[in-house]
Image (cartoon, rainbow, N blue to C red):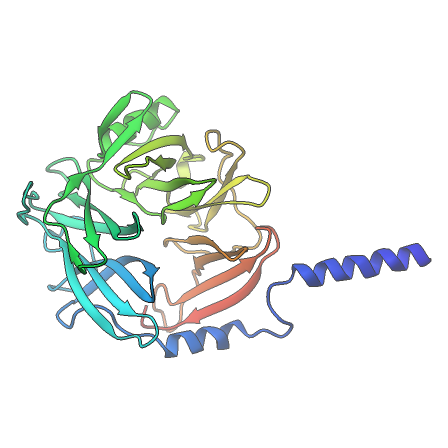
Length: 354
């Protein structure tokens, strides 16, 4: 009896230490407090903004997004979509700068972009003085999309006057980062969906593990996903492994992290079936399990997930299929975990202004 009681006490203590949130935590109230403090970082003329990402450096948030001044929404076929950077003082929430990253047909010192949308920008701190902004230039049905980068000088608070093509390294060699070489490498690993000439993006934020930069690469249009490393020059992504199973679900927009035991795990948006998110894991980043549902994410919708880790805590963000007042994407959950197995709801965002 004594040993059984001791085991029970130890189990209870372990459970308590594993908990992230205090007892009685109200996820909806916590989310409402966050929503109440939001500020719009887009310029007044912007009609539609999408696919944002940010990094924080020395008290300032550097937020990249795609935007347009014509109409709400976004589409890769809209040539008037451009990539923008907003600089926000984290303490005061004042927008200090808004700068153009790139737009179709823009002339730089070394290149002129072709017509087309500048889509899905991403930002990475390159060094103490520099941010690197990546974006995809695309014109579906007319040419291959191309991923580019442009550097931002933190001291001068200004962009370089040059842009550069990002490269993609596959088992066949190194190529401009375009849908075709990405697709051909996936086909070698069993991918059977149709090729697309657009849709190649750095969807997941670039993360560092064991001193190396990793990224989730996606072709949204083709339903194609891979884990890749980024070289020291930060201009070439190299495919580590593809994860696209089961193909009938059309999995896209992965968010990737690594669990405490070193296992890779990705959560993927699903464009077919019940549209709920799927999870895939890998011990080596090369060979991945077929995507499957997990009990802690149910009733998901076809929307981009997030999967981050801050100060030893995992944060998993996902869109719920339920709607408020019939508005799509009106409920977004953020769950937290210490081990990637047991999850607690930290935020439940509910708003019709999605």
